[in-house]
Structures are given as C-alpha cells and as structure tokens.
Length: 242
Image 1: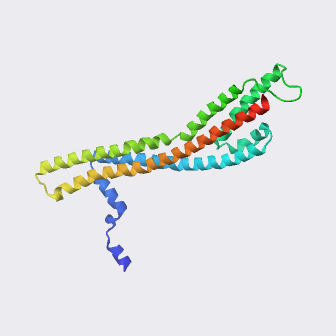
Image 2 (image 1 turned 120 degrees about the vertical axis):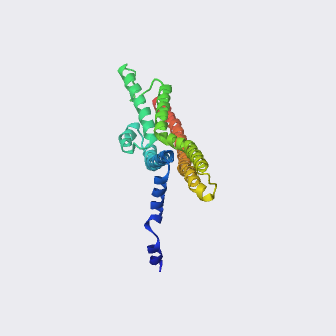
Image 3 (image 1 turned 45 degrees about the vertical axis):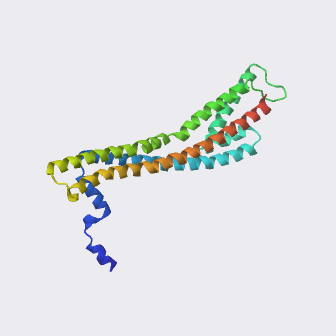
C-alpha cells in the first residue's frame, strides 16, 4: 500500500526538487544571498571536520609524548622519539626548549667552561623560558587556525539572511502595489521567498557557533596543558643544567 502512495507523489514534489524549484523561482538577489550562505555553511563544516580530526590526533599524540617524557631520563632520548608525535603542540614546546638548551650547552663548551665532571651547564634559564613562550604562541596559532572563520559565520550569517529577507519583503510589497491585489495568494510566494533567507542564515550560523565554542574550549584546555608543561620543563632544566 505504501508504494502506491509513493507512486502517486509527483517527482516535482520531492524535497530536493522542491528546493531547487524554489531557488530557480527566486530573484537574483535572493539567489546571491542563498549561495553566499551555502558557501559559508560548507566552509564552516569543512573547518569543523578538519579541526575535529586535528584535535583528536593532537590529544592522542600528547598523551603518548607525556608518557615518553616522564619515563625518559635524558632530553636527547625524548627528542629522538618526539618526531613521530609532531601533531601534539607539546612536541613543539619541547623541541624549542631542547634546541635552546643545546645551543647554550655548545656555547659553554666552545668557551671551555663545560664541567669536568661531565655535567653540562646553561648560561640563561630565562632564555630557555623565552623560547618556550615563543613556541607556545606559535602552537596556539596553529590550534586556533580556522576557528575565527566559524566566529565570523556565526556573527554574519544571520544578518546576511536578514538582509535577504528584508530585500524579499520589499520586492513582495512592490509586486503587491503593482498588481493592486492584497490577497494572501498574491502575498504568500514573495513572503515565503523572503523568510527562507532568514532560515538559511540561522542554519549556517548555529552549527558554526556551536563549533566555535566547542573548539575554543578544546584550545583552552590544551593551552593549560602547555602552560603546565612549560613549568615542568623549566624546573627540569634548572635542576639539571644550572
């Protein structure tokens, strides 16, 4: 029985055909607004999918790196294994701090100030901390890359849709004035075309806003983890190289 009901529905009444039909009937301005919102939505979803996998890999690599970092007794051992876990921002911090320590140790050795007991020394712990802070800024930029577009979509899409709605209502009232008819039959098509722009704007903005807040929370948690790692790395450097 159900297949008889489906067969009775004309193909033009399917949702996809109806939306395409509606888009083709819309005016030029309405089409521009809708295409703009579709573009914003597609880019937002692409960014959210990309950031989801980026953060998932960063967290997984971060856990593995911390396990190696806590179990190893030398920075050189950690550095040898860190390259395969490059997705974690902690690796970027460690490599920046390790490079600074290595440069200072070599400078001390070149000036024949290395310890005869085989213990390497660094000249400036502050220099190591500055390197870590610079790396923190770089890694934070990598984490937040693309999320600003989500904020832009969340803020701008409703207003773009509202602009399309206002424009459509102006056109609808102009058609009413030209035809001289005030019946609902004459008003409904123009008003519906106008309101669809508002719906499209919200459809683009709401997921982008949710994604921006979600990834913003992830960034804050990872940044707090990086701050803790800087303190831990600095303490180890002070204990072993000063």
